Amino acid sequence: MKALVLGAGGFIGLNLVDALLAAGHTPRCGRRARSNVLPLRSRKVPLVPADLEDPEGLQAAMRDVDVVFHAAGHYPRFAHRPEEALQAGLRQTRNVLDAAAAAGVRRLVYASTTATVARGQAGPSNEGHVFASAPEHGTYHRLKWHMEAQALAEDRLEVRVACPAGCIGPWDLRVGTSALLVGTARGLDPPHPDGVVNLVDARDVAQGMLQLAALEESPRRVILSGSTHRLQDLLQLLARRYHVAPPSPPLTTAEAVALADAEERRAAEGGPRASLSREIVDLILYGVPLDAGLSERALGLRYRSLEDTLDAFDAWARRMRLIPEPSPQEELPA
Image (cartoon, helix red, strand yellow):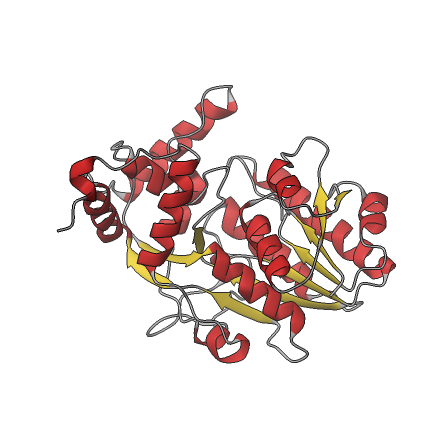
């Protein structure tokens, strides 16, 4: 497989590069001018310029490539600029699709999100539960729905879509979904609403995307999710794991939205990173239980347990000094 990974230096991207290398493929890895390439250099993979705002550069990066893995979809930093986010996301997705078609790419595997999965009438939602139009759940949901729809409408090459749940595991260098793990392990008691959250090991996402690229016959759109939780229950589990105080009671919907909006305004004015983002609030409040059985049947995926994922995350995060080492008492057998 001659592959290009867009977003190779990101959370999903690094795990995807590792999966490709383990399968005997050396992927070409796209990089932006100011991106951190040290993790990629340590993997000894070829790097090529690939900016989603540079159509000609994208086409050059895709030359002689069979498969493009697109794990670099636009990620809105702030929810209060919805039209700006939508325009950027659709423009960049169009640039990738146009470049892939012009370069003769055979297949593109696009990393979307489970935010594009609608609530079912009864029981967990699956790939058949779709929004008839863009959901009114906030900037993130609306943007990701439009970008996924744009990718699925492409007819010049084959597009397959992976819809991963909230990713956790090693190599979350920007501390995205892992912020809840890091904050809890540090005893910070991060502010939060309650709701349904679906989690998946980023290594399993990488394996799912690799299978979507490799199989001649596969579904066009697949949910990748390993477990479903109420957030408050999950935070209580994490508090016990990291030997910290139990989480505070969850915020009400109104409190969570107000706090996230205030935090994002402060961050937009040059303040520190928001302690709670509107994207995270919306994902929690509108989360639905998921059925990922199709990925197991069609792709042969076997999801890691939450405990295995947390063990791998802890080992990596401690090497990166993101979370403290356990005390000697914590290391004693129960």
